Amino acid sequence: MQQIDAIISILKEQYPDALCALQYDKDYELMIAVRLSAQCTDARVNLVTPALFERFPTLDSFADADVAEVETLVHSCGFFKHKARDIVLACQMLRDKYDRKVPDSMEELLKLPGVGRKTANLLLGDIYGQPAVVCDTHCIRIANRLGLARGKEPEKVETQLRAILPPEESSAFCHRIVLFGRDTCTARSPKCGDCPLRPYCKEFSGT
Image 1: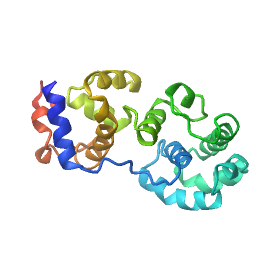
Image 2: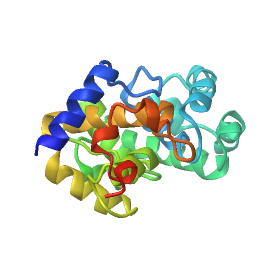
Image 3: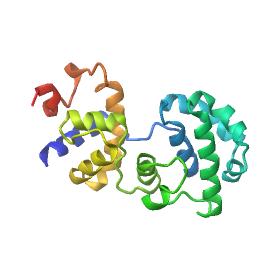
Image 4: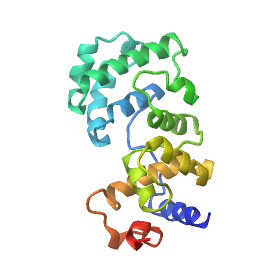
């Protein structure tokens, strides 16, 4: 599909470093940071996690943590009670069931508290280098605008994108789409005049 190849090429030129915006050093820290990012900005999560990871420097310390203390540390990320509970329970599962390692399959990742397909895809792509399609709000919005997918259900959009994205490009493509969605193809006021993907945009052309 020439269109997707062109879009990938343009995004690579615009964003050569296709990296996750969340800051982490250990695999389970990425799992925690992604859980905190639900209904919250990556920038806010990156302000919260340094103190959180300093207070709980190991997986075992998270697994043994007082949920109330975790709540206090992640309060500003919103939905802090659910997030704190999921973090502690997920770390307990990593310790007790998965030999202290983040699982490397979708099936096992989805068993962890607070981990859905979006989180699982990100973990599989960033930790294990597996083909992954992270369908966040940016990805869904832009895929629809470009005519790469139809609909707003994450799993359906994921399936449509998997059908056209080269597997080796899929994870990086999604990271680049997030960056593109933040600085150009925003939800409310997209900068269509400055958009390098304008020739491929179904919404802009009205087709």
